[in-house]
Image 1 (cartoon, rainbow, N blue to C red):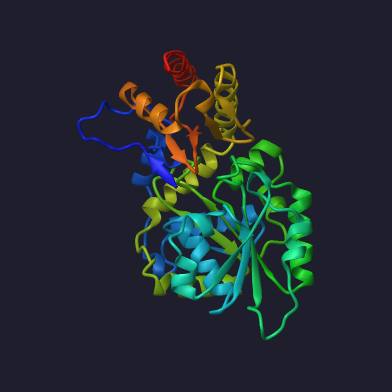
Image 2 (tube, rainbow, N blue to C red):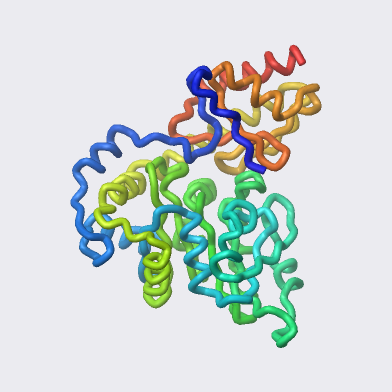
Length: 354
């Protein structure tokens, strides 16, 4: 379960927000870009700022077209509604967002079942995928989509190996499955590996990036694919009430993020490594070494539970979350190196007194 610390209106204000990269606030430059945005009716293709953003993301991901949506969850949901029919089967890792964090939307809205594939660190192997395929008979649901989450959140912000992504695509195409990439933190993976977003998404029928996480925009995600696919996503966007009219105000923030906040994701990765390094030096703290901007750790060996540590950090203005039995700390553009150093010091003090 995702269990954020209780928000008491009388509580000490949050000074160091490591809860999630969704906690970012628009920078002054982003706010200015939003204020200056040209706008129109997005639904009829008349918002120039939305059009620019969608063209940028389509080119970035190497796809024909793209559409602006309110959230990454809506990207996943509309993609499966296009790719699948009621009764179809989707395959994904057991900790993937479409299974664990979307409220059963795929079953509720589309009548799809999602089969959980096992694997370490939020990723399954191509062989695991191949072994999960079954003959196409009337006794079993059609296996329609294979989905991966780049990066794997619950896996620790881990990065899917490009060779594995390519192998999964090849297996899927050989067996008639569509391929979908949940790219909530795709650009984190690109910055960490030096692999371009178009190369990372090559062969995937649908892929998207989220702007409200490490990229720092207040809202929005963009999904890309073929023109026919995006036409059908638009149909589902309409059905789900997703047309946002003068959405250029939001789109301008996203375009600003592409121009100013991508390369700086490396700073978040550096801060995550510093946090992991500092926590690892505290006796009894078990830390998963980060690949991107997520740090998962357990303090039980220091004689304190995760829930207790999160609660005891809160009066110091430090906000963390419990996620699936571990503490998750998420670095982002509002977290500085000095904040990381202070957080490590506070954890050390609390552990020493446990």
